[in-house]
Image (cartoon, rainbow, N blue to C red):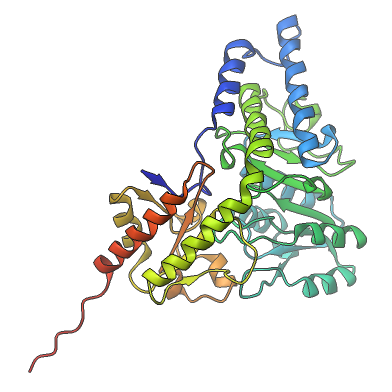
Length: 381
């Protein structure tokens, strides 16, 4: 089996599994317990917070542990809706993950101003500068790396631009983390991440809250997470998440150049094997692990099913959007037609994916191409 859907979810990294098992055996008690063993779990929880913060370049007090990026997106958008002055607008990138888009629509409604992207999916910074100069925008929402195309946004530049104009910058780093260095993400005011995107367990993530946001509440109830998020903390999950990110930062992200070469070799090979194929966002910087292909013919679901039979798992885009009707909003924002979107598949590798896996995927694509190619019209004489 060659798993090429790591942008949807990743296998549990060995370091994360070891950390989870150890914490589950040795520190499963409630961190809020007043007895000694509960206090020891609380100390370990705070130590995990202290370990995560320097990876992101921020103070530990800003880290709020959550159940994942969806909870984080809803909490941040709700906070912006509650705290921004009446009439203040929020500029949102059109190609955000569904969890951010839907939260922005629900909590911010008519206050949202949609940011345009170019044909490669990159934010038009000129438009954003004009919006910020108008003094009507109080927050900007732009992800670090796109889950469907792997496109990298200039988030560092955008964070500094927002700071100059005294606007909050909210960045979804879910796809960036574990693939590229996390250093500097703390420059954004708000950041969300999800452990299962970088080798951690499902059901745990974090929010980096803005400096001084003492009134931020991910959910109401008890006083856990220093009053920012009620509910008994999932220490085994947190310990596993932090272990996964530390392992990625110290042992994996340094291998990016080699893996990028493998992806580029794959793209050249598949262009030869499938005349008429197109790489989405080919003219821009993208994650080393992600290739989105607009295939020359055939519905993408047919390609996915036939590749699966050959032992290759790919996707048609965002796993969180598969139940929604209509073509990809990401491709639509980039100028692709609905018909092109129905021919798109995404292959997203992991650190354990080999160069040979990429080569074999080319071979499988070539075989499937023959199967799904429309039959030539029969000319009767």
